Image (tube, rainbow, N blue to C red; front, top):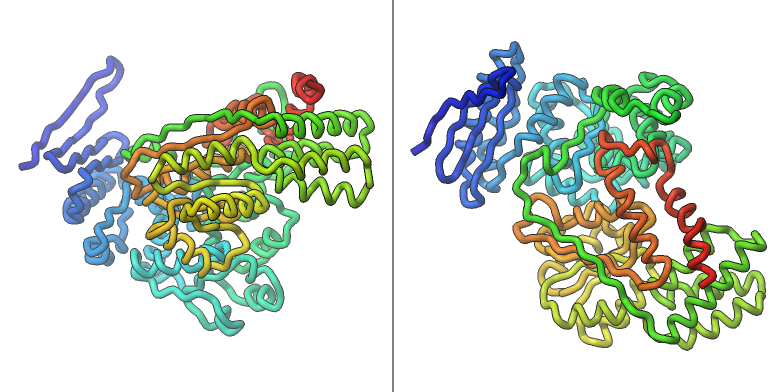
Length: 552
C-alpha cells in the first residue's frame, strides 16, 4: 500500500514543496517548484506501470508550468520495455526533452560513461519518428560498434535500422548505421554528401575534436537538419576541442576560436561561470551523482611493483642514455620519455623501439642497452599480475597501452594455462563481439588495449587492472566505465600497477592530480584551463624533480 505525504521543509527563506509517494519497492518524489521528478525503485521491482504513473505525474506537474512536452514514444514502447525489464531513467527522459524542446535536435550528449547515452539518442530518434519529422537518418559509429548499435536500437527501441553494406544503401536506406571510417572515404563520402539527412548521429564524437582531420571536415560538409554528437569526453585536453564540437552543432555561434580563447581560456582569472553559460545551449552532461543512480561503489587502489637487479640495471642504463640525449638535444623528448614508459610496461615492447633506434643511429650506447634488455626475461608488473591472477578466480579486465605488451602477456598467460582472450583495435566488429562473448562465458582474463576498449560493455565483470597508465587521465575514467555502468550489480575494484622508483610512479601522481579537471566540463580547473593535459604531464616529467630522478 503506497503512502502519500506532502512535505514542506522550511529553510528560513522559502518553502520548497515536495510530494512523495512511497512503498517498500518504489519512491516517487515530485519537486513542485523545479518541475522535476525523482524515481527510485528496488532491484526486484521492474513494474513499468509504476514508472508510467510517475511519468504521468510529472507531465501533470509540467502542465502547471505551461510546458506541454510529452513523449509519445514511451507509450508506444511500453510493451517492449515490459518484455525486456527496462525502465528509462529520469535523466534520460530529461535529456530527450531538452534536445527536442530546447535544442531543436542539435546537441552534444556528454553524460558520464555508463549512463545510457545510446538509449538517450535512440529515444530522441524514436520520438522524432513518432512525430513524423524524419525521413532519412544516418548513424555513424566506430566500426566495432555498428553491430552493437543495431542490436540496441532494434531490441530496446523497436527501430528497423540497417547496417551499411553496399554503395546503394546510402541513398536507399531510411535508418542507416555505418562506420565513420568507411563513410568519410571515397566513393562513399561523395554519395553521402548528396543526400539531405533529417538527422545525423555520431557516436564517440571526441574523434572529431581536431577540425583539421578528414572526419571533421566530412561531418561539417553533410547536409543535415539535426545533429547529435555523443561522447563521454567532449574535452580531453583543452577548450579548443570542445569549441570544435560546438562549431559542428552551431557554426559561428561562439565566434571565432581566437575570440573564444580570449574570452574563456586566457588570463589569470578565467570566468568559469561564463563558460558554463556559453555551453549550456549546446551540451548536456549528466554525472552519476546528478543522475541519482545507485550504482555499486568503486574502489581504486595502487600497487607498486619491485624491480629485480637485472631490471633495475637496464632501467638505469636507459635513464642515463635519456639524460645524455636531452643534453645533446638530438632526440625527440616525447620519444625518450615514452621509452622509459615502454620499458616499465615490458622489455619486449621497449626492445622493439630500441632496436629501431639502433638501426637508424648505430649508437654504441644503444647497442649496450639492447644487449642488457635481451637478458631480462620478465618484469616487476608481470610477476605481480601473474600472482594476482593465481589467487583471484574472478573475471578480470587487464588494460595495456602497447600491443607488444599485450602479446607478451598473452604468451605468459598461455604458459600457465590461464584462460584469456585478447581485444584490440585491429579486430573486426564480428571478432570483437566473439571475444567479448568468450570472455563472458569462459575466459578469466580479457587483455585489452586502449583502442580495443572503446564502446565495450562489460557489466558482468567487476575487476579491472590497469597494467599500464595512459598519458591522459580521462582514459582512466573511460576504462573504469567499461564495467562501472548501468547494469553493474557488484562493487567495482580497480587496481593501478606501477613500477617503483621509475617514471610510472611520477605519472601516477600527475594523473590523479589532474583527473578531476575533465571529468565534467563544468568543473574546470583554473590552473589548467586551455592547457593541453598530455603535454602538461610530459613537461612535468622533464622538469625538476624529474631531471634529478633521471640522473639517479
